[in-house]
Length: 210
Image (tube, rainbow, N blue to C red; front, side, top):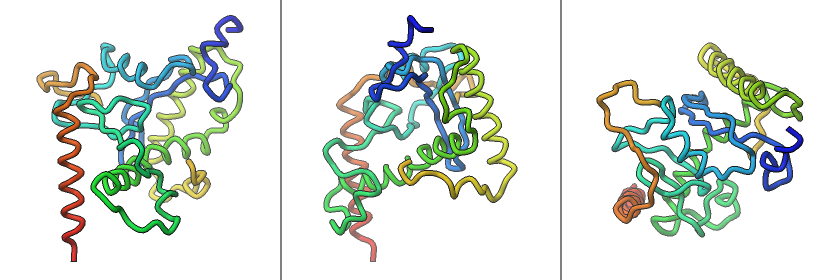
């Protein structure tokens, strides 16, 4: 592990593994992959998992919300770059959205905040994920998976989760084999055009509200 430490070092200088997680509206994880080095780019990890035998499957016509660490491609919807995005940026007296891109980013941020809170809750609940680990990588990966499974179990059984109050402020596979799933992650003009049309439609609907 000493020889491999460089590959597991993140941009912030920490030694870590890269964990890709997909969540639902109840802050439960519906797909988790752990094992890539901390230095691995998020986009490379995503390209890897969609090609694995039991990897992430995205049925055509569906999409996940992602941050800008990923490509804005078919099945993966990212926010507009260079446009205010984080929820904190909407509390500084700058007024509401001024154009379709701003409204899109506001809705994107408020919705995608669920997965940020899910990871925050996961780390608050399981202290072993907050501290430096000395276990072999394969054991670390298993610990992460078990913590996610227990987290899902508790979210399913507890109507009121006291740990939610401790989350920092900053903080599916296709079951049917006949369903056509996305097999590549490539930026396409058609996808970008659809995103622009979606943003414009959302903005026009927002403007027409009484």
